[in-house]
Structure formats: C-alpha cells, structure tokens
Length: 53
Image (cartoon, rainbow, N blue to C red; front, side, top):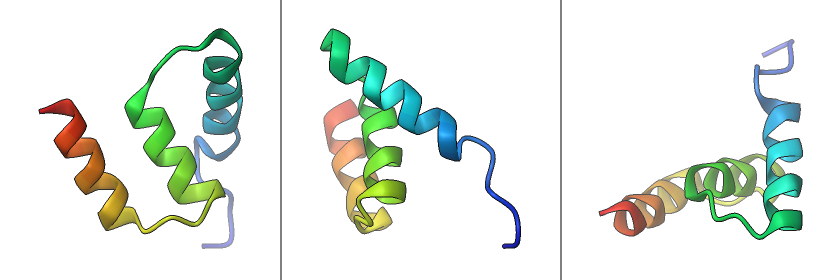
C-alpha cells in the first residue's frame, strides 16, 4: 500500500488518551498493538474475542 491507512494516526492518539485517563478500550488496544507493536494480528483478534465474550 502506497498510502497511510485511515486510522493509523488516530489509533495512536486515542490509545494515548485512554492511557492518560485510564480508560479500557480493548479494540483500540488490539489495533494499536498490531500497528505499533507489531503484534500478530490473529493472536490479538483471538485475545480480543476472548475478552469481549
């Protein structure tokens, strides 16, 4: 992909705000982990699925 995906910068901002105010947003955390921490997307989605069940 030659362009930056929509939400690339937004997820970082939302993640930082959540951290500052101690808000738990599992979907944001999973997306942040995949994009910025290079976590395995399948594993993150599995963990997210378990957490939201």
